[in-house]
Length: 315
Ligand code: ZN
Image (cartoon, rainbow, N blue to C red; front, side, top):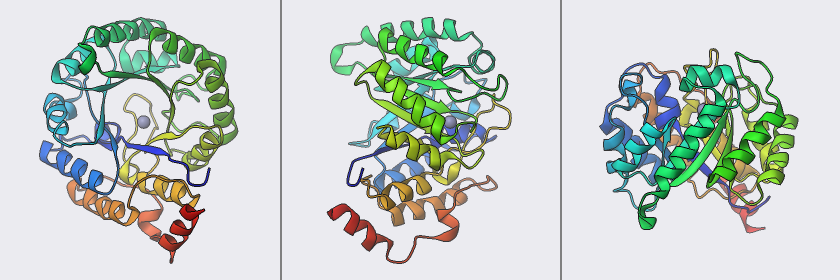
């Protein structure tokens, strides 16, 4: 694992802001994007193409896609739950879409207003929409499986169901698959096992992990996924986030804690942790009154951490 490259994606601008009740001004979102990109974060989920009346936080989705296209070298993804949203995203010029469906039927009905099997059909339409785009501009389509490790409404989720969904999404044309612990129910053994099984089912297709720290196990789950060969993770600066349709869910794994964990273990992230912590401080000014989480921002970096980190990378 030492020296291996791990990709982290900031999802706070979508997963985080959907829990913030007021509309965060577009300039603030763009300042956050710019400053975190300057700290070395190369991948962001920037907005959500859902109904503007349902989620006014993302009323500026088209504008965000357009503005983000001005940042060179950044990978920017937008979320969509249906073909209508995907169509809007493609028209706006988005080049990476993540389509999220739920392994839990109850969560699927709450979050997307349809059963999981109907969501699979919707995913097929989204893939078709992408394939209709001129090959040079064709967006990449990622499929995310929410509540893959448990659901606040249904309780445990059959891992066989998640494997079936991942296989089906791969067959339908997903370019990448992501398993999400939307409500923080996962534990490391379960995570290691399910990722290893899904990896076996879908072959070489890129596979990512999205963990919430609702019960304090997010970092342990990241390590289990890393050990199962996963090298892409979502996180949110200050642990911002949750899911409005999964009662009790709170906080993505904190970006700065995730990067600290990875660097402490000798993985390469391309991120300047001091600079990232400085952006984390700015986030509390940008989002006054919004609670932030995470251990590193409270405790600070260990003494000589950077030296240790350099030494680890040299091996
Ligand atoms: Zn999430």
